[in-house]
Length: 95
Image 1 (cartoon, rainbow, N blue to C red):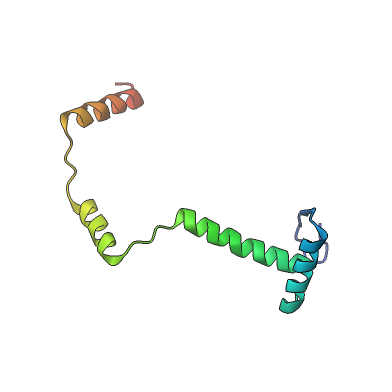
Image 2: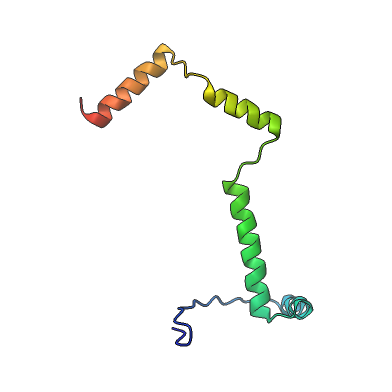
């Protein structure tokens, strides 16, 4: 535990080729960061981008309008869907 700030820190170790290490050192120096800071900042930025790509859906205005129009219309159940939903509800409630 870091007693100065009370923040518990975790460690990640990397094994890499010498050329990769030199590249990271060079890039970190351009940013005025340590290699650890550079790797952490780069990895977090990439992680956030990856999460956004998997969790956020972006639509063009016309597609968004079509989507919300579809949501606002009443749901029309056909006989088969109504039967399946009733069966499912029966299993959940035990009726």
